[in-house]
Length: 110
Image (cartoon, rainbow, N blue to C red; front, side, top):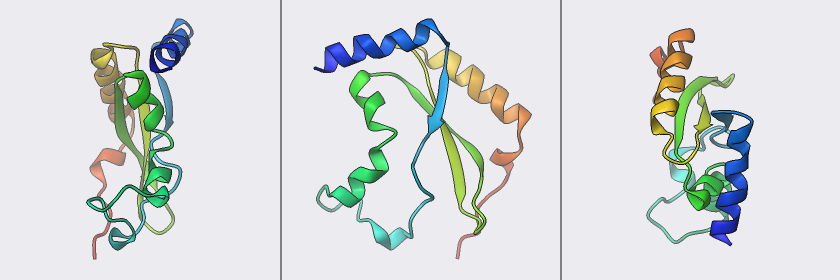
């Protein structure tokens, strides 16, 4: 199934060199909301919704800052490239950061 999915997914790159999607479906939870070292759970699985397909297909991704929520938590976008497309992802990510200021801001901690 993985090979079939990966082959079908590569068809996307006949239309575009890179595409962007959310890196997560919601803002970051409080640090104590998830135990990254605990057993895998449905609560943790929801945070993989936009990353798991590319783990499955083997496509490289790059996450870049893309703003902040009203309460100051960071948002990001995930850039997805073709197989062995790390160089184009780095170029696009760099161009995006040159065109925006998000990578200079830091969330308030504490």
